[in-house]
Length: 390
Ligand code: HEM
Image 1 (cartoon, helix red, strand yellow):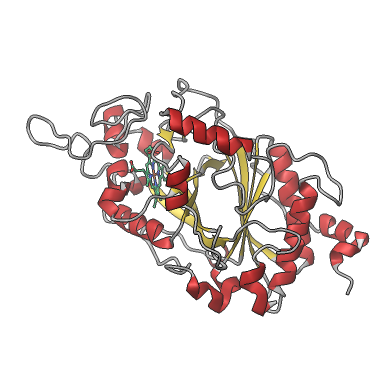
Image 2: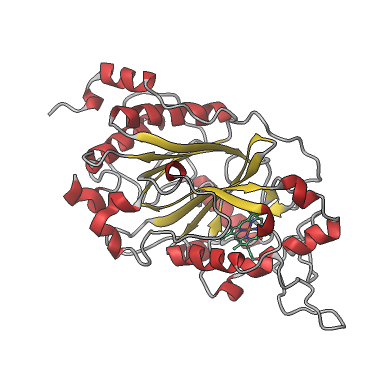
């Protein structure tokens, strides 16, 4: 059988039919207003970062997809795009086609420039997984949460494509290439959002000027325990991704006095040090109190509310990007990876119940996806999950 990939004219047509990527890509990056942050905390974290970046080359190789914990320091630019496949689409064929394009982008057979630090991470939505998805611990259906502006277009979806690189042009080109191929397979773009983060080692500042991504699993044992599913079954080597576009009322938050802002986060703005004391980027001491018995990290501080000890959940790897579509639409392109969806839902529920940061935050796009193990020529992306539905 001739596939589209065998037919160069079809491939060319796919490129021409590329869906538009977000126009704001890299265009609105704010200048550095605040001092650089200290490097990551411990020697073991640095060792794990070295180990991860040693394996950090481009698109999927080995058992696990990149763009999750490889490279350890997220690249500075990203686009997240979510697609819907037509009901009758052969998921296996589409996934195989995506795999071919990823190999091509990596500069493997089929041509293409060297990929640099480009990573492409692909996730499958609940409808695509079908009955097979029921085997996934905790499933993939996100419930309704507070402060959501839902539109059918920006909620859910069948296919997640996260493209990251240090070079925004490389991100845009790879995203457009994949969009074109998917359009040729009948997929339609649901939503797409470009994001950016300042360069630098360790946590970087978000649009509110606070260091973000401090409390994250980093060492290999932590990542294996909290992020990745294991075992030989169809979910082994995979992880669950949650992506949400979170609009922030930045001017509203910044209109508060600096101490109030710090109380809303639970950390100091200058260096990320916990309000409970200790050095920059240390862990929070949730039990620390003032002489008069008040918590040093206030009861409604975001970092306290989201802390796994408070939520009773596992830990998530947050790998988000700032986004800015204009003064009225800017915030956090939230991306988290965890081994089960409950880690996210239990945390978000707790934030919904009270959180002095979340008062300024509205979700405008959302979805959960299973990120299957990386593909090989013998085993197409998601092949053992989509098999019976091809
Ligand atoms: C616009 C929205 C958000 C902003 C600006 C934001 C920002 C921050 C900041 C500055 C910190 C403290 C530094 C750090 O540990 O990284 C933090 C911690 C954290 N956030 Fe968020 N966050 C947002 C939304 C969320 C959401 C939706 C979740 C999950 C449902 C979440 C989960 C966490 C977790 C788990 C921590 C670490 C808490 C700990 O110390 O154990 N955040 N966030």
